[in-house]
Length: 189
Image 1 (cartoon, helix red, strand yellow):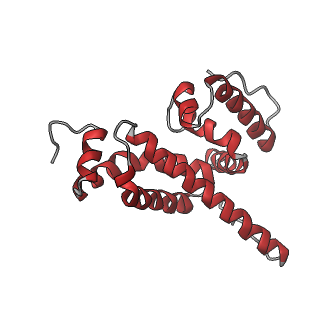
Image 2: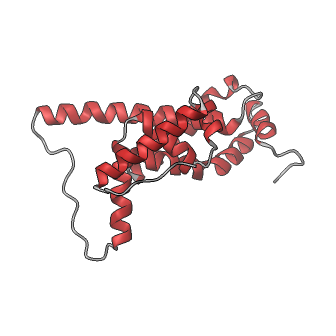
């Protein structure tokens, strides 16, 4: 049931007061964009789903500390970015340990004759994005996947819009190199 004032701030205030349905409303509003962000960050749908779930659990547990003067979407996005960073660090350690014992980290993907060229390219793009350092990956995803302006991404990452522009441009160049694309990736707008 929607209320007259259903802005994120108002709904978050009701959730802070213990209204579980209000929090559920925030989850419904934000789960898809957060999933897209996490999916591109880690390059795996299942891991992204887990990250988003963990983000909402962390948000629920930290809701008393949420500052209504700050955008709820920026707050939950920060939590999700932190969960993505944590996952990446844990995965890196796991891979190092497995490599130490010469175990295969990733099984070879089965060749599926039904996979289209577009699906193959998208999977290749996901893999390339997941390989980017966070320094380039985060601004690229915040602007291209989440839809933030460069200025909003700069505020989210505590930097300048010009730095975001540069990091996105270099991130795209790194993706092109990882994918073997030799043509100019163009200017970021």
